[in-house]
Length: 180
Image (tube, rainbow, N blue to C red):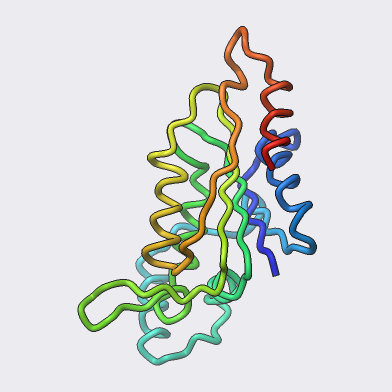
């Protein structure tokens, strides 16, 4: 199963347009539209509850449903526009909610993270109005995927300079679509 993590707020999202082109070549997929999900930053109470459940080995609690879905996906596509030097905050909140030791990651006796996800590939799709700088978006996700989730194969699909005067946004999008 391919999991599409959609962080695109705008109905005419260029990022979503690229992501759906990627998904078209992957067959069936399950979409999570994060802007409409009841996701919340982890509170002290939520962290305490998660820690207690993990310590008890109780990973069947509904609190872990998203973590199981992420860990079980064969491929993952993240559609996240480049906003203010990063991705939309809802993606970080989602990552906080799925980061469950014993489901998506574990730790070796020396403290080294050991990924537990079965995905063979993670595709990060983004668009930027100006120059795209991946340091705090794709590079962050790539690092998490490889170091903590066990997903070594990641790739970036992107289009940039879409809102800069003198650049043809539609031509840039067409060029990006051709690379898919």
